[in-house]
Length: 407
Image (cartoon, helix red, strand yellow):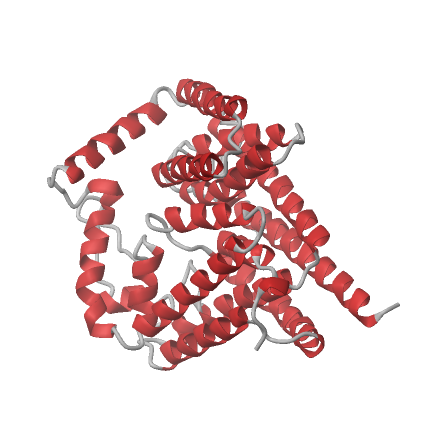
């Protein structure tokens, strides 16, 4: 067998195995058989194997521009770790989060392997992500029906195998946008099944960040299709009907809690646009963001350290209403700025821009819209180890190395 063909098979089966193993570990974590600390160490092992595979790939193919930005991201992440408030925390991540330098390196390796896949293998991986996402939705429905009580965020909303409805919402945004694009861009009728599943998934999370991100992504995709004169009104109507019908059903099941949260969110948004801002808005996110912005100048060059957010406040940042301590910025961009500094932040933005440019060269940049949907919700949410790796895999799947400038 040709070496290149063998390597392509290894890339595919490796990534396929990574997704299945990490999904299985999420199930174990849901039922407290393991904690995220164990989850992260399994990820390191998988990334270690992936590093060897990545090196072999690079021996057969040249570096691309994205690889350069990835290397720069790693360098600044390493610098941030060296000069962090707690090297151990920066390396392994804060307790209960476990998203330190080693985790980010794992993400980078998953991205690299995904970018080396052939188009047909990339499609198979996307199907696997949708299938696993569907299992999350099914389990999430059992949760909102009260059959399974494994949600630990204090809500009665769906959380899938992620224990938290907001984290579940992030995964649902990824899967919803992917299924929506397949439904609107492709002619196969089977994609409507995934659209129905993940419309239900997004709404059942009752995460306002997820619902808003899904809606904005829907508008962006429609605008793109109108510009390309490829809009199909019937499919747009079907999508809107799915939203309305499932919103009514979920609201009924949750005894009006969905509509209550939506109206509360809209009222807060109206007040913010009118210039009347209260720190408790957005589940106290405005309070967190305001305090994060105040601390960024003190750690501008190299950051306080990866996942060392809490050290920037000496552990004294408490929410004004619930009095819970804050260990994340609840905005991935502010989180990166404070923990990795201005250079780490800029390198991340340049990496994303590189991915964007590559996608725009493609005939149907379906995954670009998936990336955009994640980046929108990242404004309101935090990166978590059992969801973020999917995002980096999507980034890799979206990247066409044949369209990239070699280095």
